[in-house]
Length: 405
Image 1 (cartoon, one colour):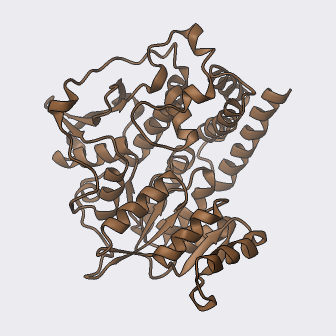
Image 2 (spheres, rainbow, N blue to C red):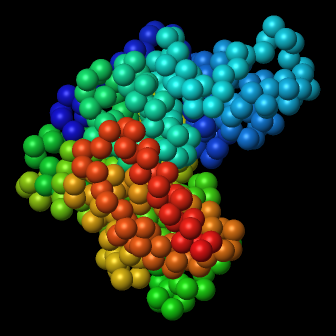
Image 3 (cartoon, rainbow, N blue to C red):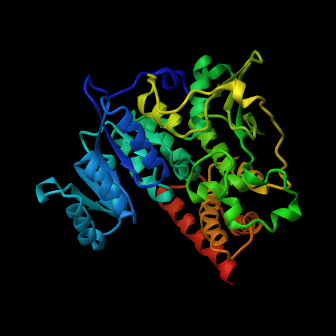
């Protein structure tokens, strides 16, 4: 990350309210984003929303925020969605324009009047909308991991080429983004990503084999969607953050460390050449990094209660055991070049998390099968968008075959 990027000013913000679109508005991050927007209603206005299958929640959002354009998954959902809008008391002349699928998300991300795009949709489906938003010069608040994980080189090239800015939403990357401003990029020695360790950090390898989906979904500190909660338990989520950090901040992976910090109070640390370490602390609530991404470089009162360190009492730290949590090692190994391997790992992981939640595989089968799929893959170097998408499809199919036989 260059200094202009880290120290720049918010672009495209007029004296009035900033126009935003939210991709994935019905998910966990999307809903929390709308909480922030409601709290800062004098600063933001919603132009576009997109959801998938949760039409009832989306209709309620339309009733409250009155976006001009709304994206749903398929034209087949149109009648059901219109019925829900009628139930909310909206008249036909108050209905938003409807767009559909991935093309619809891209349209919402590139609306001419939109200044910022919150990308809260999960999965590689966000890749084309993100690239399109950046090419259009939008500021992108990026909560989606897959874009940088699978196609970091393409995303950063699009940002550099067009001037579209990426501001991270993930709590650890947001922390690095904030701490980075204490110096210059040339003075950064390394960054330290903190990890809660999830609910199983103290379990031995044998006990991990018997972990249930219900146990994996009980994250000790964060309120998140199902996939990211399981990925936090396996530490694959932290591995994805290593990949994201590499691209967003221009660091080699040997300058990115991970430290277990169960209290989730310190969200990341930046160490400078003189040995000084700058950390970002805060209450573990995603509305804080969401708000910072939307208001950067400014700060305003938030919905979140300030951190009280006296109540926290103590902060503890532990090294990561890569033998018990091999997903992190898999991610480090995949981050050393520019290839389709990260896309394969991400695609396989998404399928396997679903299979684990469905009870068809065990917790420790996730890294085992990911390693098998990765070993069978023949990576493409400097891949194009099409090659990345093909690798993703291949990985999903191969991982599923490994489960079903």
